[in-house]
Image (cartoon, rainbow, N blue to C red; front, side):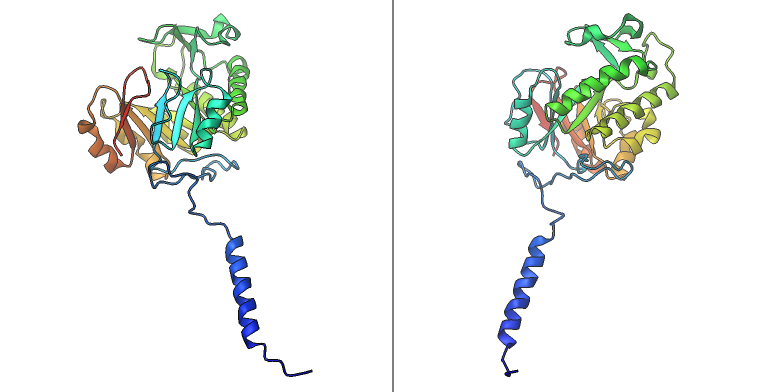
Length: 287
């Protein structure tokens, strides 16, 4: 064979191979979006509940919670929008996605609302006492998963069909309230775990709304926590297991000024903000 001088060509070939390999490797830290913040989205499954594709927010994820004063205000610099299932269509969710945002589906899982289009599906036997200060809302008998299960599954399917990434189930602490039913701690645990498993089975992320007394038992099943007024009632320490597990805590205060809670909220690692009680578009975030 002739004695070819391949030295330069070997170097070129090796360089091209190295570049090709580098381009084929995924970059784990690449953010999905950056809407006014350096915090990336994460789309990894929650560590204690391995379901592919379920969104688990980074602890510092920015957010907006708007259930009234429609249409949705897109001017808020937030990575996650929590909006109502029934009041928003697939186009609204698609528009949020087009902006690089996560869309969370608000569903009342523990209370009956007389204005909802599926209100007639709930038999009188599972509708209990009025929710304090909320006209048209009554507690549900969460022991009756045989009755409530198909209704809640239909709602989750609607969330999925509209393109939502996750679900915020409200009023999942009835055992602490005067529901009209003799609900126990274990009744609530069973129902809340059922909600989490049912959501995850559809690839939906799910947050634990309030129900702070049961966090030690429910932490492995939920991807994040959502809380109202823990600073007002001086009970925020109960949410720390979520932070310690690397899971986000979303907190809203209504009556306190941001100067009264934001410093502590940031120290705890919470995503806190002040909102109007009617949950319109206005917000004053701590971060």
